[in-house]
Every structure is written in C-alpha cells, then in structure tokens.
Length: 310
Image (cartoon, rainbow, N blue to C red):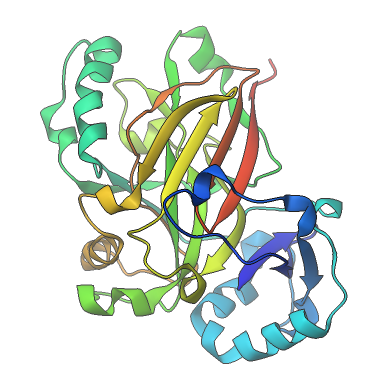
C-alpha cells in the first residue's frame, strides 16, 4: 500500500500502476499522471488532527497499521480517486520523535569522502569513516512539493552544501533492543529521502538539521509491498546529470542491522525516521538546481533548490 499525506495532512492511498521493482526500476519511475489518490482519512479509528505537533493519529497508525490496513484497503478500492497531480503532497511522516541517520554505509562513499574532506576541511577525520548513527532535527523534514532552502549564512561563507539521496525507513511498532531477525517486523515502510549536508567542521547534527534539509516523499510504501530493502536501485540527477546511481545491495550495514543497532541506544518510537546512508556520488547543490531522485518501487520526486531570502 502506498500511503500519502496531502493538503491538510489528510491520509490518502495512492492507486494506479503497480510499483516497479528490479535493478532498473529507478531509471523508469513511471508516469505520475496515471496515478490517483483516494482519501481514506475518515476510515481511521482515531480523531484526525492536521497539526503535526499533535498528530497522534499518525503515530497510532504506524503502531497499529496491521489492524487498520484491511479497512484502508477496502476504502481505497471502493472510494473515488482524484488525479495525484490535483493535490499537494506533504512529507509522508508526521511529527516523528526523532530522525536517525546512518553514516558511512556505502564503501564507495567512504572512499570519496576522503577527497571531499581534504577539500572542505583540509584534513580527513578518520572517525567519520566508520559506520554509526546520529540524530537530525525532526524540524528539518520537508515534503516533495517543498524547495530545499540553502541558508544565506552558509552561502555567504562559501561552504559547500551536498545532496545525499537515501532509502529511508519509517518505524512501525518501535521498540528497544530489537534483534536483527525481528527488525523487519518493526518497520512500517519505506520512502525516498534527501539528506542535505553542509560540508564544514561543525557537528553532523548541526550541519544536517537546517529547515528543509530532510525532504521526504513522494509517499510511504509499506514494507509488504517493497519486499527486500536490500535490492532497490537509487538514482539521483542534478539538472539532468546523473550524480548517484547505486543498489542498496551494496549497503555495508543492512536495513535490519541498522534498525537493531539504533534500538540498542534509543527506543524507536512509532513514526520515527531512519536514513540508511548516503550512496557514492554526493556533490554540491546551488540555488536554481533541480534534483530528481527515485528508488525502484518507491516512486520519484523532483525538488528545487533556492536561496534563503535575506
């Protein structure tokens, strides 16, 4: 099932051609005009609140999705859809308690970061070349219809800002000390994310937590429809130039291992977001750029880059 948040954070199910899978799927994300959206908000057993700060219904949906999925599917089959292009899609998450990000999780990216750090820092930080997780501010989340806003102070300082297109996990039931073998049972689904990053000497969390630095979309595809998260193709272009193109099969730490590892340090709550790591091919973005990112079976989103107004 493809779950979308749209307009005043109403819940919709995206219907239409089945999601593509396979190693070439990201290069052919399909025709969005063939997709429709059915509003299933009224089927939810919880009061709907559009304010993301009090959107407990979304976290309840993440936690109890298995119980409400049959009614949502029935409503999607029987409801009247509208063209997907007639609504404004928001980020397919609402008020996550935290964003967890994975560092150094593709070998080729680790290799390229040596050159990036020499250029931007004048040295290589060896500790940053090992896999680990860190936190980003939940307020960095933006949707597929929102631009990435580059801070004026960062631009004035001449610091590079890079794109990182990633597979993103949305936590379902959550938990603490989750065994690797049980981790898939704690995942609601997956979406596409951009981990926008300032290349500077500041802490990771600071450099990656500016507003709009975590675009997510275009919708959330539930885990049962995705299948193996270790067999998805990621593609990102900047102004039509291919920058990143990799399979999640080359992740150093697999999705279940990431979930288990993170849960040993912090309780995962329903609706939490986990970025699984930047593929190789990261590069600078500037005002006026257009990023198109897609993942096989998960769709595609196009995001504009703008400068912060003075």
